[in-house]
Amino acid sequence: MSAAPSDRAPGSDAAEAAPAARQGKIAEYLASHGGPFFELQTRLKLLRANALQSGKRALLFVALAWGVPFLLGLPESLSLDHSQGAYLTDPGVWAKFFIAIAAFVLAEQQVERGLRTKLGQFARAPLIAPTSMPVAAQAISTALKQRDSRLAELVCLAFAAMAALLSFLNFHASDISSWAVAHSAEGNRITAAGWWSICVSLPFFVFLFLRGVWRHFVWARLLRKIAGLELRLVAAHPDSKGGLGFLSQYPNAYMFFVFGMSAAIAAAVMKHLLQETLSMTTFSMIMGGWLAIVIAFFAYPLSAFSQPLARLKENGLLMLGVQATRFHRAAERKVLGRNVAADAGPEPDEEIADPSKLFDTTNKLSTMLISRNAVVPVAAAALIPFAVAGATRLPYKEVFSVLKKLLLL
Image 1 (cartoon, rainbow, N blue to C red):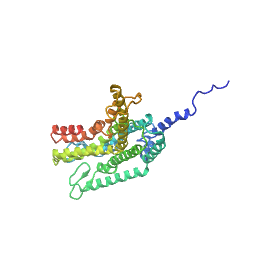
Image 2: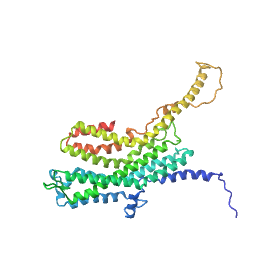
Image 3: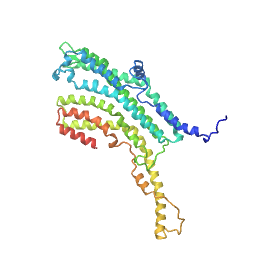
Image 4: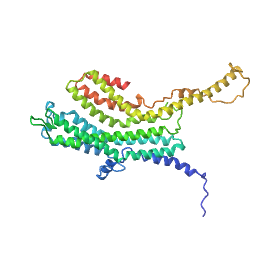
């Protein structure tokens, strides 16, 4: 029995395969996969290729970075005497070895899911012109190689080692005793807990932070390359961003990461507050400055889309302006029988759609993807640790007033 003839149009398989191929290439971009550290964790069975197991790893890493020094310092670790530099009363220990390390690891799942969804929208819409797809695919391949760079992670490790060296020198220069160092006239002696923090806890914190920053830089470069391609944007899109409104929300995928780093910096500020060396004005400036740094961190990749959006708005208004002139000129002739100005006699009455609503929508198109509404969660993550730290010594009403004003900017 012969097979029934196919009623599919020639080339239809290729047409259907193209979007699938685009989606498949984008699906390869997993921001938290790849690289030597990921491979090491895979070998140690801390994670799997299809499961990051962020919660389990966060508990393990916090146990190594925060729990081990606590155990090594027993029974002194149980003290709550802040004047003696007790382990449990050191805000830096809690911020860096407990909160930040947990936040950096938990952020991996959130970042990977968020960036993958945003990148996938370029293929689903689709927003990239077919002629630019090969270039986009190459940009993603380059980003994956940079993500997996051994040199990049070695540099992160080198900076972590430098931080450990500085910590060692700082402990030896300390003129007071604490959980990490025993001060005496003969010289300082670093405790077992102090040595662990120098060799393991602090380098691990610095490495995870720098690794996360590097991977965001890779993502930023990828976005800037995409911004330079031929994009199929829509001037009158209801999101007022040409169809790129979804992209402005990507910074919120880094909420945990920003919270972890903010906690570490806020802990350093808190030490000065405990020594009563910071005024409310200085504290407010620190909060505002840190928020500006965080916003600039995310504004860098998004700013690349300002130029294509500006061109889109300009060209859209010009084209819709021509259409509006033709429409209202025809409407004027229907009512008056002629045009008021520069009447050229009878013209063919053709059906022209009224572009007024499209013109108004295009006129509202924003050329900036970053906005207050889009980054409120990540801004809150950046500021709340400072507000909590400030409220321990400064009038809490003033501290939270500053927090509220910064979030409303």
